Length: 328
Ligand SMILES: Nc1ncnc2c1ncn2[C@@H]1O[C@H](COP(=O)(O)OP(=O)(O)O)[C@@H](O)[C@H]1O
Ligand SMILES: C[C@@](O)(CCOP(=O)(O)O)CC(=O)O
Ligand SMILES: [Mg+2]
Image 1 (spheres, rainbow, N blue to C red):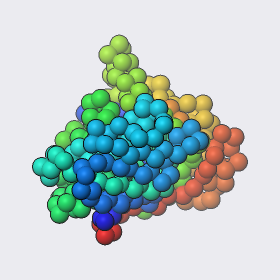
Image 2: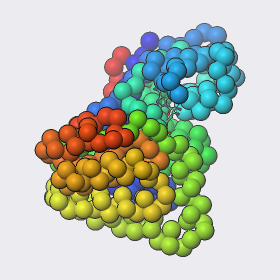
Image 3: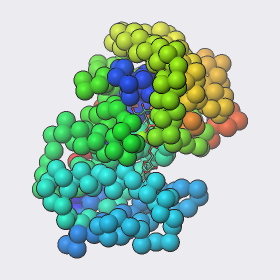
């Protein structure tokens, strides 16, 4: 058995815009997905998702190499839940040139699904790392990030950036712009997260922005303006100027809302955080529901969010310096 873990992330700036070649600054956080992999001799893939709960029930999915479920759960639901894992194993078979490799995969994750905290990237990075090492192949971090990116790119119909998966593989604060990706020096940022208990469909939300850009030049201008915010934000990040970082986060959120990826619950949490005195607050990830991220070194924002209608959970998140961890 081989075990790896990988962190989730929040976007300080740049989600959605990064899909169209603008820069983004995601930061890894200490919420992790942990994946155990044991090779099978029969070539089958069996995935046990310990805490994958969709609509109130858990899916245990196992089946032949054709990836068909042998449980009586609708295929569409299983493929939605397991699409990333299936594709990740496909990348493992490709990079290790072992088309018939079978695995028992068990996934445990602290990261809420579809909430903008990069659960898909964390699961994919940890699964690819553990499964390749189970076959005796240890990938360099860059190759691991590349294979994880290809996984998200294929699952999200070609609509994915390198940001989430590079951040999860590398850890810390990173800057991604197209193929260019590198780590950033960042101060210890006082992240506070609000979670509305919901989720957004990344593929669907990314498609919505793509359609807006195709229809309106000003939507493309809005995406480009987010890129300008990110370039200003990375200059400020190194100085650790939380006041200006917060202002830029607020601006970024406003443009994401204009692009149609916010929601009533995300707006309520963002304003609750700002009214509590946070330096800034914005949705994180694909949007549509899920999480906001705020900066506040005091307990005020966390307290205010915990009393905000529609906020199911409020918590602090530490910057995760380590990306993928090889546990066994
Ligand atoms: N614990 C898990 N077990 C299996 N698959 C998971 C798990 N967590 C996330 N996933 C996969 O990632 C998908 C959510 O990814 P996505 O929509 O990009 O949201 P986010 O990355 O913001 O969490 C889930 O639908 C599922 O396919
Ligand atoms: C919307 C996007 O920029 C980030 C998606 O983040 P998440 O999967 O919702 O955590 C898509 C991408 O960069 O692949
Ligand atoms: Mg994702």
